[in-house]
Image 1 (cartoon, rainbow, N blue to C red):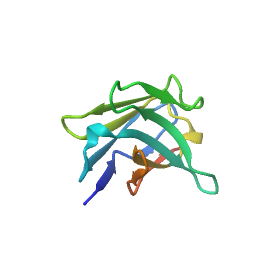
Image 2 (cartoon, one colour; image 1 turned 90 degrees about the vertical axis):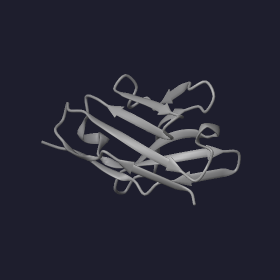
Image 3 (cartoon, one colour; image 1 turned 60 degrees about the horizontal axis):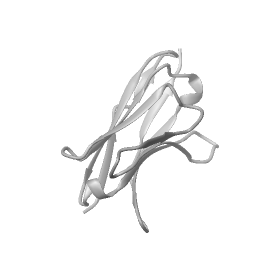
Length: 116
């Protein structure tokens, strides 16, 4: 059974940091491209960051470049998102995604709220 379980969300003040984690099981994690998406109320789901399966090359949305860092540990089947210098506009539900060919798996998401 495929599972993606996100953790690490919460309430943080502007300028603060959070680290999100996604624990994967039920599929060959190292064969999948992993991504973090986010969805704010009333807005479309947005791709935040992606890390490739083989070379671990990364890509980021312009809105988070220089502030967020995606990483993966293929030995532990986890992908993380380090978020620094958080802004109120980063408030959203953050979702973990695994993608390979026509297979795409999603977690349930973790809420991140940036507010003073």
